[in-house]
Image 1: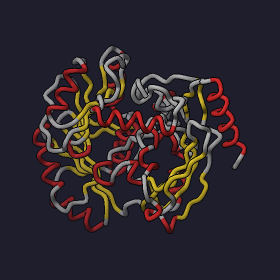
Image 2 (image 1 turned 180 degrees about the vertical axis):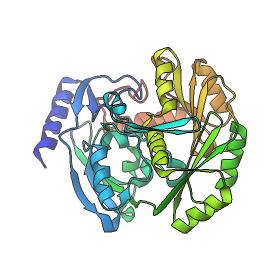
Image 3 (image 1 turned 60 degrees about the vertical axis):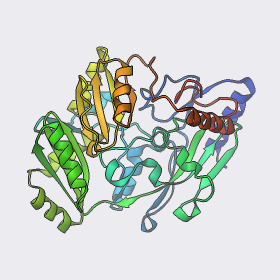
Image 4 (image 1 turned 135 degrees about the vertical axis):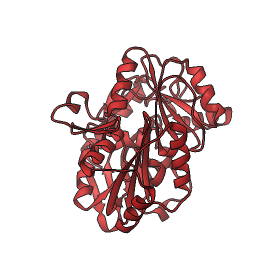
Length: 385
């Protein structure tokens, strides 16, 4: 066991002995997300580096404090990637410096800037980017994990291949847990080759027509990798074999977007530094709320006041609104989904959708099993956890 991990174990043992609370932090890029952080910062920066990487096996094992940029650069050298495109949330000070902007009929993206997100934060928050609907999310690529629990024990779950996953698949439970179960020390991830060909198409169409179109195309054997609709513009990304992408472009029509502009656009959407999210951040600063609404992809328009961007073929809808939280959540529930308060100056309505009684009981039992003294990230997911 190395010195960095031993120091963290000592911190947890000390915190447990004096009943202190710990706020797990990687790069600090997601401090805005979830309920307000509580406790003394427990930094993961020392747990940095790629432990093993087998490009031929499409598996990488990486420590939690490793910057996402570092991991993705290593994968790119082998023509591989994290296909679920986790947001990197570039630091505000670097988003505009030397960046190139791309404009696609009202949708813009920005490339450049410095990433501060880490692998541990990626797993703990469980967020994914534009390709999520096509390829899956973070938990779908988690093969194994090492966790430092609230008893200062180092636990290992899963392995480096899918057949190692037996019994309780705890590593996947960590995805989206917001650090309440313990400190993620290391994870093994399945990676994929970058697609050999990509193309981006642009269409002018209203929301209802765009939703019908992407759902209709989704039922066909088309290499659709991502979609985004905002301000009467639908943008579609195709990815896969070169012949399949070319055939789909001919079939779908639309306006082809040049690759440099398309790449900047999808990067800006992924990292939340495009025009929609920049305007959303400004609105939040003046009292509005940015909601992340998860719905069945075939659900109709939300019909709520505010500015809306739609991803994942209709399954993820970003809404900037000043409507009461109860109104937003009732609308989402009525359409078979739920709403998460993603950014807001007022988190009193609760960040995540309320749990049913059975789910709440399971959450409390998991917390008690892994962190009986409530050391880690208290209340970050739900106030009573």
